[in-house]
Length: 275
Image (cartoon, rainbow, N blue to C red; front, side, top):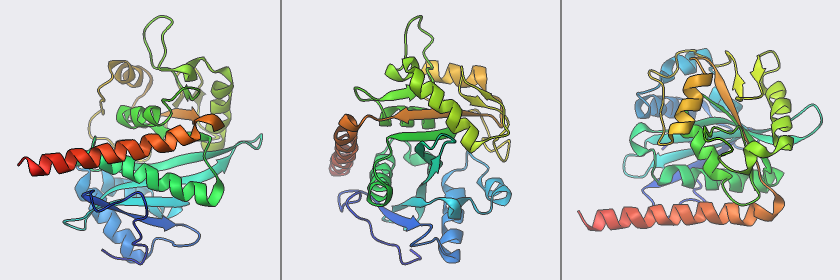
């Protein structure tokens, strides 16, 4: 395992089959050896994406993130996930956390590596810039959208956009929150000022590089979310997902990630002991 940033912190325990590495663009930057190791590992771990083409088109992607958390398989020492985020600001001065990198190896999706990485990322972000009450993700992947939705699925949290097809229905309070919808427009302008943005669907047109990153259209377990992405995106488009967390919900958000991580660890131990 290359590099000096090998601290696993509270987000990784001996119970988990995965450790985390934390890098910081300003304090512990990703070095050339770590970058090659991470690029090669992600190419192997995500065969359903054209990762080589992504890194060719965006060579600085992994170094650009202000905070970068890498999931590492303990047995093999191979990187199996990457989660990167940076602080940004809207034109009106509203800070938000932009989730610019979110990759999980194909065979590990739905396991503990996602929750473990998110908890580690939040620890880093909180320690250096405070809790991200407003967070945004641009994605073509319904699975990533659902993961972001789960992050903010607590009372008082608001999610944009709505993907419900039920008349009068919604994924939660977010779709009915006009303030968050207005903030989404500001965030879209901050992240992609020259790209067309549809506030009704969250679609930002033509910003995906490379356009054919996904070999097939991804699908999740939620039919409404799949339908929303199928209706509103073509390859190269992205859906902007925005989550607003009220201050009163912060402790519950953190406890939720700790609980999910612990549950996954217990499940992994049970599965191992029964084989």
